[in-house]
Image 1 (cartoon, rainbow, N blue to C red):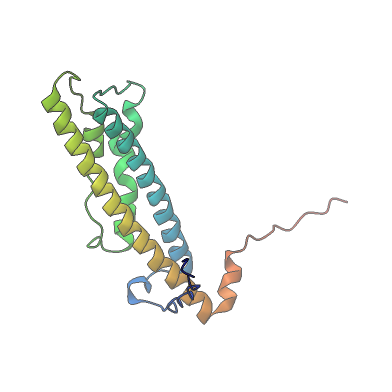
Image 2 (image 1 turned 60 degrees about the horizontal axis):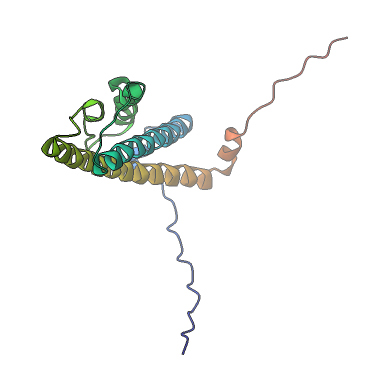
Length: 173
C-alpha cells in the first residue's frame, strides 16, 4: 500500500534584522562586501574542483601535473580574497586555508606508493579545509544578504539606489 505523502508547508523564513556587525558598513560598502564574498566563494569553489581533480588523479595511481597547470594555484591567486574579507569583518569565524600553492606544486614519483598515499591524504585534508572555508563564506554571505534586506525593508527607497542610472544624452543640433 502506497503511503500518501503530505505536502510540507514551507517554513517561514526569519525576518531579516539589522546587526551591529554590519553597522559600520555603508550601503555601498555592504554591497561591495557581498560582491567580494561572492567572488571569493567562486574562487574557493574553483580551487576545490582543482584539488579534487588532482586527488582523483592520485587515487587512480598517477600524479601527472602538467607544467601548464602549475600556475593555477599561485600565492597571488590564493590569499587576496581572504585578506580583503578580513578587513571588513573579523576572521574569527573563518577557518584557515591550506597552503594550496605548495600542495598543488608538490611533485611525487608515481611509483612511490608511500609518497602517493601521503599526497592523497594531504589533498583530501586540503579539500576538507576548503569546504569548511566555503561554508563559512556561505554563512557570511547569508548574513550580509539579510542585513541588506533589512535595510531595504527599513527604507524601501534604498532599493532604487541599486539600479543603474542612465547618463543624460546630448542633443546635437
